[in-house]
Image (cartoon, rainbow, N blue to C red; front, side, top):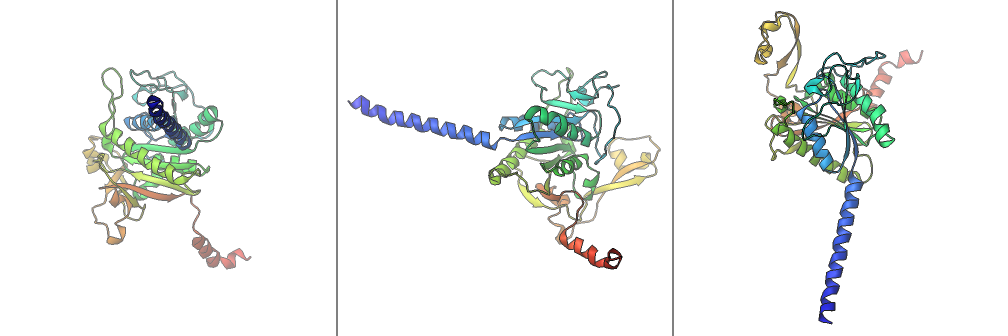
Length: 341
């Protein structure tokens, strides 16, 4: 009789544990997203690290990247030009010469499964479109819940975002009504291939990926079965160069302070920025970078070009170019006489 009495609490405990496990599994399923992951850099340590972190968190992820690095291509698209077989290998041997112009990554790497990875021999937007128009319907029969672009090798802050393929991917997806987040980190997150052709993970790539999953988890938790971002709003996230597991988050805005910008130089061989990147002996005109030496004003303290230096900057971006209602009304008033004709 005593043994039977001891058994009943144990049985109740087992039932509670089973119920808790069931609820946890249901919660994971409910919060799991279908994600298209793209970038403008191609097959990199950053995108591999984020893919693995998202999968570990329970999300279903497909990856579509440009064959080659396409930084600075912005929203460029090559229309109605056949993507013929490759004449050279993709970055980090994602595909080799002779492979199709777009398709699954053909690289074989010990310890890593590329079955969810594809490439496009084109611009960042073309790779994102491949993910949305070809891969997502084949996988889920619908558009994804989320598009993540990045993490980019190099921050995208301030007015230079209009040239960013990373950010343009997000604008492209958000224009279709899909929640979208651009993520950028330092150039020191670049990974290297070892002698066997395996692409080694950069230590900082892993840290960035872990932080990105935390951000996504917070957004999912607050969404309550709705899209994680409201229509017409996308996020631009930038990590500091020396990101650590203890790095903290901060609200930011694209703002008016630019950490750097694009400038035309007459002679690349004499350009100090080109020299700092080891580019020498090229006495030709080119686009270079100019770094801002002015201090931000107090009003610019929340601008992402300031915030990302020390914290993880998260900015809200509007989608496309439509202005606010006040801007619309200004135009109506200013040109009323012309519109009334």
